[in-house]
Image 1 (cartoon, rainbow, N blue to C red):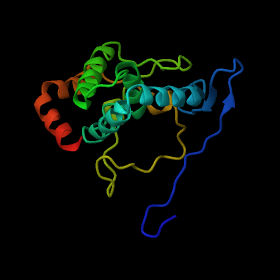
Image 2: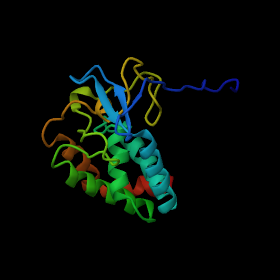
Image 3: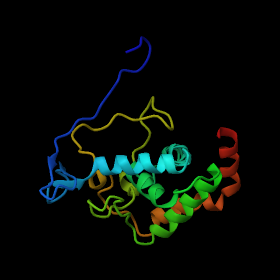
Image 4: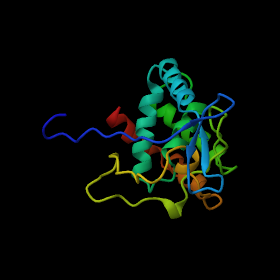
Length: 191
């Protein structure tokens, strides 16, 4: 702890190992089964592997994508961004190419309305629906974390549980492709 700096925070949750040995059950009272399946260890291993494989392009692109998401009414949850990036940003490339690759891939994937779990443990999950997007909390600007609701569990289903309006996420994702020149300017200034 450092004086004048934000306090350290951590999320904690109950989890039960899945009988198959693949992943965990995480409580989610928002769904009928009341349990989500997730494999945070496999997800972490996949992310660390792709960060090395892409020579940090993956990490830098995901950071920018999360910032973009926060400044555009959160059309995606963090889970969608990571999963889609794992599928699309797989080799070293210039950052602007990584963003173009991500948005093109995301636009194609959202035709089905859901994103597959990269570990294959949880079921598919939809993008953040427009009616569940959070307005910015006062005092928390774009790119900063908002306080989480401690009563909600974390995982693919609980973060992205409700379905979005057909085509809405795709329109939200295609917008940066239509305004590519502005996106290039942002990336060239910040990269």
